[in-house]
Amino acid sequence: MSTTTDGSSRRLPAGRKAELAAYIAETGQVTVANLAERFDVSADTIRRDLDQLDAEGVLIRTHGGAISSQAVPRPDTGMDVRLRLQTSAKDQIGALAAGLVRDGATLMINAGTTTLAAARHLSEHRDLTIATNSLRLPTELHPLAFRDLYVFGGLVRVSAQGTVGAVAFPSQSGADREIRCDLALIGVGAVNTDAGYSTSNLGEATMIREMMDRSSRVAVLADSTKFGRRLFAQIAELGHADYLVTDSPPPDELAEALRAADVEIIRPEA
Image 1 (cartoon, helix red, strand yellow):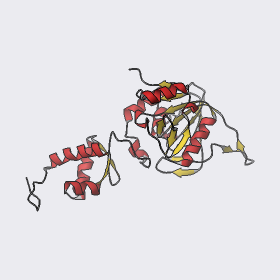
Image 2 (cartoon, rainbow, N blue to C red):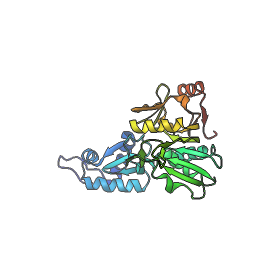
Image 3 (cartoon, one colour):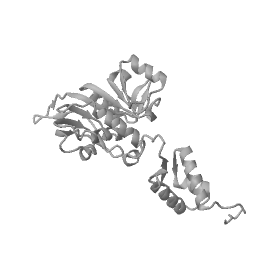
Image 4 (cartoon, rainbow, N blue to C red):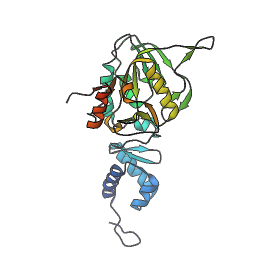
């Protein structure tokens, strides 16, 4: 064991990695600079440790740092990182949401990692018409599942890999065509008893609300880490959805509020 200049023992690599993993699990999200200072090693050493822990599935490597695999991501966390969080829960939710879709249906699907999971579970469906603001969803859909696929235009949010703009498609004359869908599959950032459904971006909230308004039925897709949170921009009150598709039972207060709003909770059987 080597020593530092003040005579204290320097941690062995194996011990440092274990402490580093525990610290990130407790903190949630960290930077390389913070870890290098805390553990008194070089930034290059921390990067190597994080790369190894990422390869072992202990944490998720991000640009300039790392995030705990159990952490609730910050609103600006990139899509590639969020795709690796709560993967089992999102897959369960996606399968349940796909069960609400009938062949030949018209769907609105917003950009998000949970809705991408739902899209992957549509592979056995046929003749769907899908409208989305997700730039990634077209690559996740099985080519035989849909008849027509439309992507809404607008400002591109790189972190969400989606567009923000009007829920409309202009005709040749320039006027927007009226569109309606059978079902909206909507991913949200937070589900709260008082605030309803919310997200971090104002323009995104407006667009999602319009998707919901243009659909006969609405299914909100949210894993249990979204419960009790409240983000910057409200999308809609709880009763604006017909279903909440999730992986775990909501807390009692939220569950009661959902029942009072006539929202059906769909989750895996115990």
